[in-house]
Structure formats: C-alpha cells, structure tokens
Image 1 (cartoon, one colour):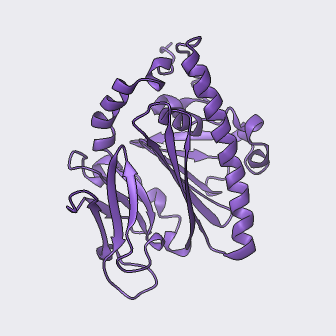
Image 2: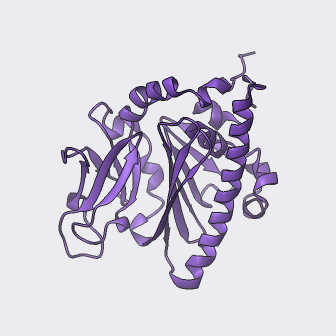
Length: 281
C-alpha cells in the first residue's frame, strides 16, 4: 500500500521566510491567467496586475474590432516597461509571466489548450472586477478550492446545482480540472492553474480569481473578474450567487487560518479520493 499524502505543516502557512522562498521558486517561474480578450476593449487602457509583489500591465495596442486580436495585446513590467512573455489561446484567454525564469507556455501547460476548446471566451463580455484582502495565507484559499469536502456544509446553494457526492478533481501538469458530475463532463468548466489562479464557467457567466500573496504571510489579496453573456438583471443575479459562494469560502479560510496559527495543529493525512487536488497542489 502506498503511503498516504500528508498536508503541508501548519507553520508553512504563517512563515515570512518561507514565502520569500515561494516567491523565488514558484511565483517567478509560473504562468498566470489575466483573463479573456474581452477584458481589453479600449486601445491603450492599461489593466494592472500584481503577482507576488511584481506589478505588470496589460493592454490593447491597436485595432477597431470589438475585441483585440492576439497580436494587439501587450504585457509589460510596470516598473521597467519591458515587454513580458504572454500567450493568447485560440479561444481567447490571455496568460502571462512575471519574469524570464518561467518555461514556455506549452511546456508549463502541455495539455491545457485542447480542454479550453469547448468554450469560446470571446462570447463572454467583461462586466466587473473587485479586490479585497483576507486574513489568511494564499495556500489556505488554494487548499479550499482544490477540494469539495466542505461544499455540502459551506455552500448549500452551490451544492444544489453540483452535488459534492459526484465531485471529482482531475489533475494535470500545473492545472486541475474540477468535474461536478463525472457523467456530465461538459456541464461547466472549473479549472485551477498553479499556483494561484482559477477559472469558473457556468450559468452563462464566467468568473476568475487570483489569490495574491502579500508580504505578510497571514494576509492575502483576492482579485475577482466577472464576465457574462447578459447584462443588467441577469448578470446581477449571477453575480449575487457567485459572490455568496466566494464569501462562504472567505469566512472558512479566515477561520482555518486562525486554527493554523494557534499551534494546536501540525499536519495530517489527506483523503486520497476527495483531496487528491490538494495533494497535487
């Protein structure tokens, strides 16, 4: 019998020196989801992102079509204004790096683009973004996203649509696909991109969030972007629902971080079936 996977030590969720190691060894060597091309409509309007204290700017350089073509997207370092590597998928998602230390996009995500082919991301207009901080380590939020043992109790409204009984996580190189019902693999698209980005497509809308570490290992900045095929009341109804789910996770992560910081917990064993996404992370 193979040895069961274990959680990270609790101290890793509260350590400043460890975060500096994560910053050099993980964040500077990864690719990040910036969003679909619909996020960048106006020529020259810069959208700022900050990943592990590295600020970058993304914008549309030219064109008069409703949304930019891949060659009309530019990503630069906010400090030096030097170009950064980025990649636009055939269905309209933009990914970028924050340094030259990351491998190529296709080395990092070798089997991602075929999965993304099921959604035309140019059909979901950008609607809204919100940012706020939470009293938890960035890994606390990712751990929570990567399993759904808590869903039935913490997300009663979400569980009505996607019962956790059938929930599965399929892990790939540097990303995970969450499948709400294995018998209906095309019902929604839920993806986690290592280390700190997500993409959730269902109900006519799409949301993505970035779990951005701050220099304080006990504080994380959450950045959410929302897209929907409809505007007005239909979008607001969708937004209200997904915000409820997000706040349920937010409260759970703050309570979990409090427990991690007390010192009464060190580490434990992960459920090999229900927490395989956490083990992969």
